[in-house]
Image 1 (cartoon, rainbow, N blue to C red):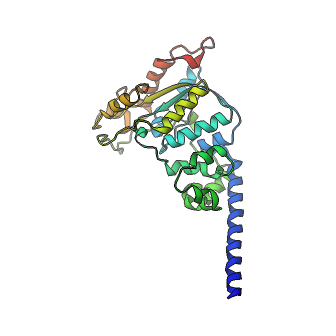
Image 2: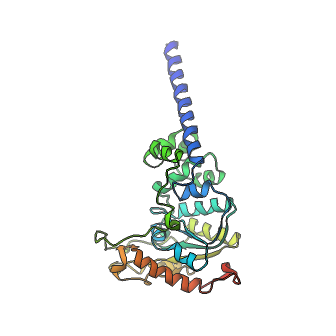
Image 3: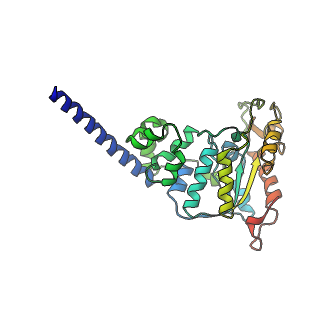
Length: 305
């Protein structure tokens, strides 16, 4: 019996040590890469200066054409992440501040994601390789139900999110294989191929009266003298329940409503995402309204609608 117990203990210790070694090797690969996606591009970076930083989900990633801001003399990057929620946008901004980014303006796409305070596993998992390396990331995940498993069990996070941060992604990080996420200054253009879903129903959606991640982003901007511009972006003309945007306006009167800035279906790839032509029309409107006269003589952070 004692031999059996010793064998079991030996196996458990060996497995624990193996998992710890694998955890260390995977994490080391992520800590030396900054070319795979927007999270490692920020996490493994030095201070950067921006006139405009864009945050949000795919409705930011596909709707704000960074180069058009650049053409107006505004140093810009689109950090919108497809599939992301405000949970991830908030954390990404915290990491920028920690890395001493100088940011004049933050444009936050804030509309549909105001309905929840959940994390988006597909995106939040990209932060997890740095969980033990970053106090900010640790604190951001602290209230998550699976925090203890993610934090205290070696290699658990890499197993649980294997499709996102497992062996394949670790290997590509180790060899610094680039992706398209950082092209076009973070903006991802969409084309109209006739296959997108051109129907939408927002009737059941209700914005939270106090979304803690939205409020946190707003507070971070206030504390760091960043001009905060929250925007609702367009939907196609077929969508049902457009009064959702009125509900957002009532709960958050500071959010600028642009849901009707572009409406014709020909400017959309799917009902909630404009194609490249629509995005350029929309971006031109935003620049006109918020950044009409950028020049070295202006304090760009003070430009308002």
